[in-house]
Amino acid sequence: MAKSGKTSPVSKRKNGVSIKKVLCATDLSQPSQHALSKAAEVAEAYDATLVVVHIVETTHPGEHQQV
Image (tube, rainbow, N blue to C red; front, side):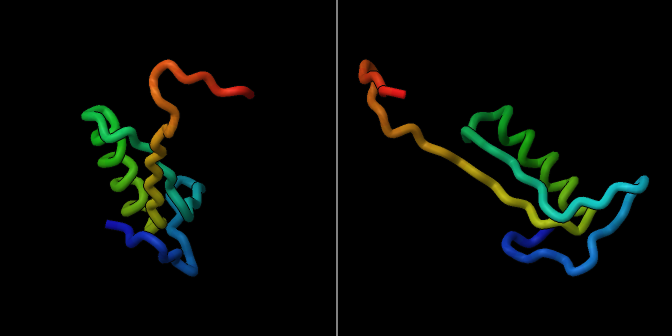
């Protein structure tokens, strides 16, 4: 599996495509776990860095944000 935080100096090329980083956003649900697994496979195949992001909303139900 690709190591987080380390970027290969030379990324692998497959079918003319070079990938250095793979970003996977997750909400920790079962479908997102499947997406994380696939993202890890892609990162490993290309010797790329896997970056996983999870964002937690800080507003409470019923509160409205001004945009």
